[in-house]
Length: 118
Image (cartoon, rainbow, N blue to C red; front, side, top):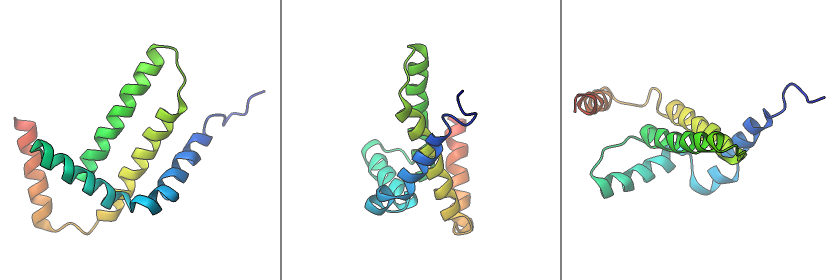
């Protein structure tokens, strides 16, 4: 009989990935993804935030999960990575909570409104 928690161990695997050696190698996700979106923004002229950069990665993993399910595949790394990216997103949000200046908050809200309007 299969345990009722079979498959949930993937959450621990994701946790270990984003808090262990990977974080030690690349720094806190807030710094890692800020570097990443800075490069992306310079290349494309976009203005993604670090949170939006992580959400892009979540979208990519969800796309791969859909492909998996549509084709009867089971590739646990996509699920684990999606969980890990969401964990990174939460870490970034916690990191910046209370640190954002009022002007930075207003600027971010304005960028969001412009993107929605366009």
